[in-house]
Image (cartoon, rainbow, N blue to C red):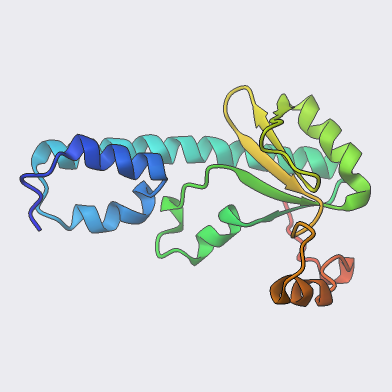
Length: 173
């Protein structure tokens, strides 16, 4: 489709709100977009990329600070899954998910507090603490890979014994 009759403001608004701009970018640039729409798309991707670079920078600083405190934090979910995308740099996760050893919960919470992250009460659960920094970085730290409920999938995950430190993937900073 040419897209001549589309309301591009509405299209980009929906794409940005849903967090799909990075995924849809390569499809949209192949379309015969009006020049203003193409420029708006490029501008949006640029802004999203800059924002993601800032989140990545803060995530790396957070991991370095954790290492200084001898905390074992592991990245997982969105930021790790980006590597599976055809263009990983266009995967814009809305938060950073960290796996925290259950015995290091208090130390991890202290680290995040010291770095300006405040607890988001409405989103936090027993085993998932959601914290937001005043400048926008949202971190979810999990002390479990799953919440407690039974299903075939959760029982299979439990049988993998993922808490065993010998099964951990070590990331050098």
